[in-house]
Image 1 (spheres, rainbow over the protein chains, first blue to last red):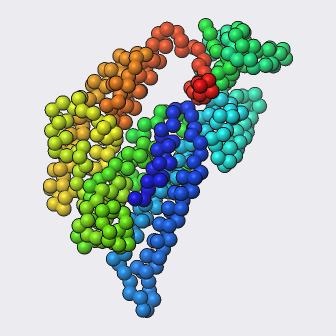
Image 2: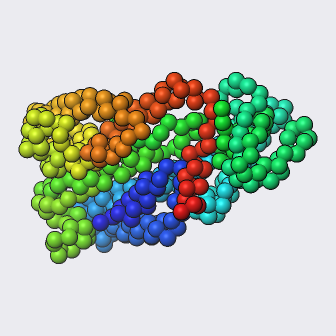
Length: 199
Length: 222
């Protein structure tokens, strides 16, 4: 039956646990496109037969149901492929807002080349936008919640290395230690899971 | 009726979309998957699908002839039915016997096994042409629509109640009998409950690690 491969493809994305992106399934994508190519060619021959205006050949309207059926299958496959790529991009965009401009390795490995390029372009657009509205100092991914205090206390969850603060001092982040830092400085690190916010 | 969580930003969706009034979202994974449901169909009289005999597994004909019975996926059946090329009957989960069971006590029925997209497939069925006689067609659809609504309303009470009261408990027993739409509603209730409790405990001021990182970190540890 037509349309089963594309269902596998979309189902794979649906089954992925929230917060993960499954590896880009190029193989299955190619198989779907192949199925579409076959459908399209079959339709092309049938259409030229059905509506042929040559003198010898008689038009064959009885072919129309088949043409319609194949066309619906083509549209279904097209929708599946678009859906697959679009929903992956939505996930990828959410990654940018959660984890910042550097893509963690475990995500990078499951992306296609085009998706990596898209991510870089999205980064650039976002950076350009933030520069244009905030005079160069605004980071829209900061302060996602209204801050109650300027500084917060954090616990470091892994050896991170040096963190240079805005006023120029360098703080060495070591696993297990507590720090009292500017909220704006560590918000991103908390979301990346390197620091933990404690009260 | 998409089951995806609300997104922080809306970004313009690319252009193709479905005809209005179908109640489906072109870009929703759930809507796409739910339309795989198989519908018992029959090719109408005077219609045959030339050179497509291979669609039907139990004939060896080269063409798909009129009056052939076969199960077609919903997305295909819908379009062919609109063009009056096939007629359909209800799948098992929407037949009279099931409706009687649902009207007796909808809360004990396993809608996951009978679905798992019981409502969205049911809604799609309402757009089919079921009978050539217009009155009969309307009547049949009205009965289906009533069953859907009643089932939903009576089940929702139980779902709401449990989703607002299970906290930090294993809910799989509760949720594995739910339709996908119900599961989504259940998770919304749970989310709200968690947020409320966090607010009462003053946890809401804490910046949390992203769910994305906590997942990937878990994987690394394994």
